[in-house]
Image 1 (cartoon, rainbow, N blue to C red):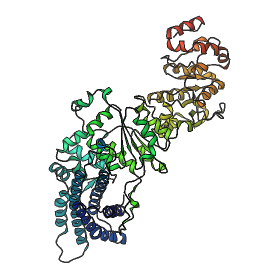
Image 2 (cartoon, helix red, strand yellow):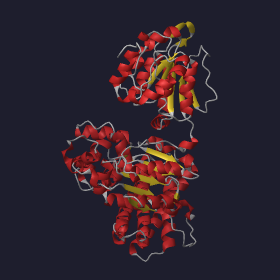
Image 3 (tube, rainbow, N blue to C red):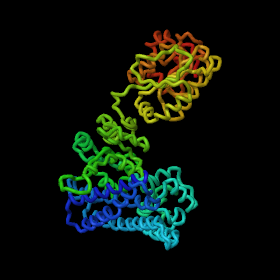
Image 4 (cartoon, rainbow, N blue to C red):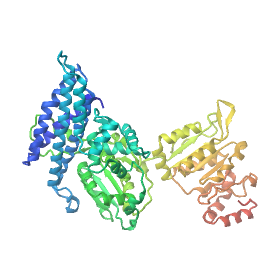
Length: 627
């Protein structure tokens, strides 16, 4: 974010807080003190600074930008505490839920916010004065660097109270810097402690220390996170430095059967989810509903021990809306600062998602959006997150909780997920560009056509969320030509099918895979016997049966076409059976053999799948070789 945008955000947030306090007209002294401080900051510092930046005659100094980022973070946290204070006065969800929202505690937090704001603004003011002093030409001006160093080394560090944090920052980041990127902080921590941080450390540090998505980590945010404990202890607890797991034995030894499933719902209009709420409450599920992100975060912090155990055993899930009004506009007091419309938080969904991931909760999160669904593509940047505007997908999301079922097809795991009934089954077709012998049409399928193994790999990586959802829902199949022409017909790659099959299976996909090949390439496809749900054929009609079953969303269609019996026109030595005998598809089925052996296949498929030895006996009786 550029400096002017940062300044604009700070000004608008300050204006909003002033409007909020004016509208609520609380008689608490902390509100009067906070309003006075905000008013002084707004009119005495921010507005004059904005006129300087808007003039274009000068740029904001880096030290001023750093101070603005710190002020911005304090203002965001103050806004959260004001929302929690308002929620604490409503108390309409029961003692168990709202016991943690003690208004007196929230007022104490607001006092801390006011103190933190005063300290941050003092540093900002000093930085502005130094910057202005440097720009002014004067024959009697004292040396610049000593003055700048004096302000940076003393005032900049005053925003922190933890001595360990101050020492680290001064040694690794620098006294003239009040913020840094997550990447720089990662390298600095590794150097300072001479330890190798975990591979996920950069992402964890970014989510945890940049809770509001400001774009950097400030000294104030690091100090707030560490608190009064040593810096190394705080980082170890966060999980960015690997330690023995013995400290987490309490969670490891918990009895899974004693853990009730927990669903957290954050929505400013929970009545829109009345059906879902009533359904969940009719089962053995603890449901906690919040109308603001701030209250949800406060409750999560207060109930961390319980939530960690539920999260560990997959008994925790969260549903959040995306855009949320988090301002009580019932009092329409005129204000000269800003319209209350700024209280519409169009990033509320990402805020709670970022908060949970920053604290290393792995619980699935579904953003249930409406008109703002196209703004939820951020879910692709987080693990185990999805977004939708359909009730059917929401039901898929909560099903593992209400059904007490650990299995989850994760149909919801993607951006803007559509219901299954609205989604066409998917065919990934790796075709031979030099051959048009196998047209695919009229099957009611969504088809992704690629011309090589590399293109297929890139397609699956780019749309991995979609392919995994469809695969788990038995709505994905792969059709691959065994050979690929490369530039000239005389140059052919005869290992495409094998390479793609190995890649797909190693990447966790168990979807049906059919290799289509020419007669002279058929012997090369013997590799299919090493994989489940895999077969090969030279007959287009077999491919049509394969595709028809996909379009009809069948997942047990192997009995219709996949078993080759002795009526085949090929030599018995060319008969292969997939090992594992769970869902076995034989190679090289012919249309004639399918028609003649259909009644045999249907009658014997269950026995074949359940008993490997009896199947081998039946093969022996028909003069086919045993495996």
